[in-house]
Image 1: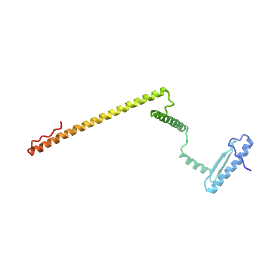
Image 2: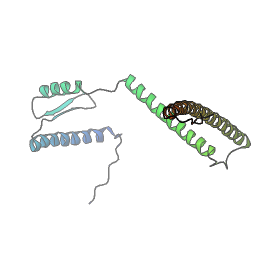
Image 3: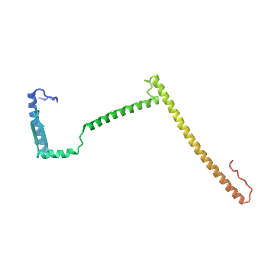
Image 4: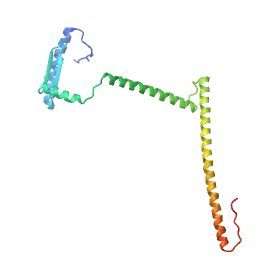
Length: 188
């Protein structure tokens, strides 16, 4: 005969609840004893009945086990209401960030011309305006870079012209010392 699966909910009948409590309490205390013997560990179980009666089992001194538990639990952070509020705030913030990321990804796809089928005329006009503004920004940046390059090239040209003049003067001095009447082109 196979035993059916028990639904985990409160037993409404008080007499049945008391019988179940007694059987399960005894089973729990027996399992705690077996665990302590088989595995050579300290085990403590405290159970309060519905009427407030105390049932306990400890493989060693209960008071020492409780003191040990308190010493250990001081190091473990407990969730306080403010911590729970902070966690809830972080969950909401994370959810908002995911929504923003999704919105930005959709916007990016639209700017790339993908997924435009569901857009209204107004949305398409806004996308067009954004693209025009982006093009203006790109062109302005390109113009700035070109100006900087031109400035650098002009500075390099001036430097090369100055160097050319110096070299021509050196050649002129060298030719003059050899007695030739050679006049080099001075880079006009």
